[in-house]
Structures are given as structure tokens and as C-alpha cells.
Length: 271
Image (cartoon, rainbow, N blue to C red):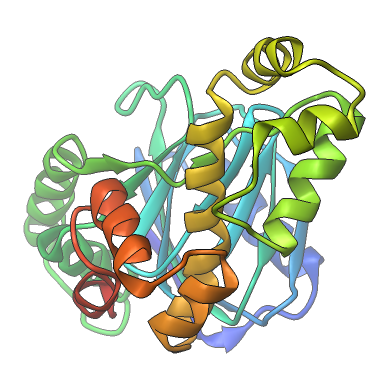
């Protein structure tokens, strides 16, 4: 087990990030732990690594983009990134990150997925990342690592991935929606923008994204709202700005997708 604990140091240059990745690639250990702080707006260009990565947001919100879609990682969650998958990252706010890199022979992920990090998993990851500060016996580190790998297999997946279309005209509408989400956005309006019939647009949208327009709209509203909620903005303001008629409708959608109300959910996810 090896760790790079730089959680008290802000990464200011992508070269710093890639220097850490080079160290990780050269490490022969099956599990490598890394802690970093990234400033708001920091971007890491597209890259990949030979190990699977569990990218954990201890605080702040990060956006990870791949050719397969975009994934948002709010506090208390992690993105499991398959080995070899090219991805780029953007820090929506200042982010305190803990990452666990695991040999692909141990964690064989096929597609990225956002996982809800349990209290146990968060504590185990913290122990590994900060082990240099609190020296531990080799046996203790091994036990922590084994328990963490078992816990990772039990983490619940959350619908925070947002598929993005390849068609540039449709992608332009999707990007605009994320900037100005509208829960009442209609299929007919989007179809008209693209000069299509409702039926043709419905088929086209599903072919481009893999989901229905209504499902994507719900996910996108949640996707756009989480950074503001994580930043402490009132739920009422976020709900109304997203086009919901009242906070009850927004809360119902939020609970259906993430299992609890916005206030309860974010309080339980606080690092």
C-alpha cells in the first residue's frame, strides 16, 4: 500500500496532477491512495491510467467528462472510473479529493458509475490517504485495504451520470438546459428547435442519449441543482430557478432519485 497525502496543498498546475499520476503508474502495489485539494475552475485535460480509480469528493463538486457521458461527483460520493478510460475533470467549486487507485485485476469496472460513499468507506479511505501522518503497521494497513475493497463492492449506485448526445445541435440544447434548467421543458419545444416532428425527435433523442427526454430532463435538473445546493443555497431558490412550481414538487423528484429530501441528503453527505 502506498499513499500520496497532499490534502493540505492546493494543486495549481495540471503538471502537478500528471506528476502524481506518473508516480501512481510506476507503483507496483495493487492499491494506491492519493489526497489532493483543487481550486474552483481547475481543469485536468483528458487522460487515462492503467488502474481503476475511485474518485471521492470529500467536499466540493467535480464534473468528470468522457466520451460516454458526464458524471457529477457531489460531496459524499465517488466515481468509479474503469482502467484505461480517457476522462477529463473540471472542479465546479474548490474540491478536497481522496482517490483510491486499484489494479484492474481486483476491480474490473466496465463503465463509470457514481457510488454513494458509506460512513465506513469514507473512514477507511481517510485512513489510507493519511496513513503517512499516522504510521500504521503493515498488518493494519492490509486489513483496512481488504475491508475497503469489500465495502466498495457494496456501495449503492446513484443516478448522477448524465448522458450527452453526439449530435452537436442536440448537444447545444442540452448544454443550454444545464445552464438554465427548466423542469417543465417540453418535447415539442425541443423538436421545433431541431425542425423535427415530436415522434422523430423522441426517437432521435433516445438514440443519441440512451434514455427518454423526460428521464434526461429529470437527471439534468438534479445535475444542475446539486452544485448550488452543495454551496449552501436555499432549496426554495434552487427549486424555483429549476422551473418547479413549488418546493414540494422539487423535493418529490429529489427523493425519488436520491432517496431523501435535499436538506436531509446533503446533511448526511457532509464531510
